[in-house]
Amino acid sequence: MVSDADRDAEAAITGLLARERHDDGLLGEEGAHRDGASGRRWVIDPLDGTTNFLYGLPAWSVSVALEDDEGMAVGVVLDPVLDELFTATRGEGAFLAGRRLQVNACEALETALIATGFSYEAEQRAIQAQLLLEVLPRLRDIRRAGSAALDLCAVAAGRVDGYYERGGKPWDWAAGKLIVTEARGLTRELPGQPAGLAAAGPAIIDELAALVA
Image 1 (cartoon, one colour):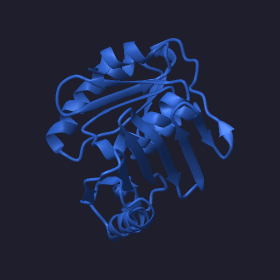
Image 2 (cartoon, rainbow, N blue to C red):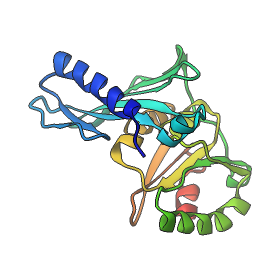
Image 3 (cartoon, helix red, strand yellow):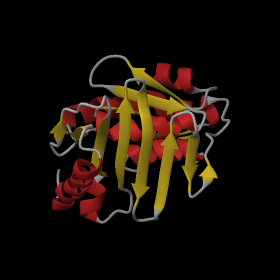
């Protein structure tokens, strides 16, 4: 699903970057692509959670990240509904409204509240539902908000203890991954296809990744 808001937001972001950072590359969900000459690339999800947006559910975001030869350098996720701006700069921490973020110190999956998401593809959703039968009894509970970027920010802010999902794209996770790691969390890529990601605090990340892999 895609809306005019997705396209308009991407046009606004890429237009600004074209004026201010014209030597940088671009990769956007709605088709924006430009090879850069600077060694830097902006990874843009102009509206993460389009289904929520179209249904009037207040869980969607704008995600922008900057990557260079060393990986993700800057990540920004805006929740326009709650007027919350999550930011991270590599090596300098993650912040929300000037408050430094830190992941929860959850030490056991049995007490962990975990966020996840589901695919648009019916066949993949069926597989994800089957996995839930194995995963859910091992956790405190599951939450499904509908925006991967906000889920990762929730991990960083301690609103949930972890996150996992398959089927995401680079723009879904780029900013959020940096925000998690700068909040002293860890991420793990899940083996196999489609692409998968897990994120959590150091004490449970490996067990979570193994459980959902």
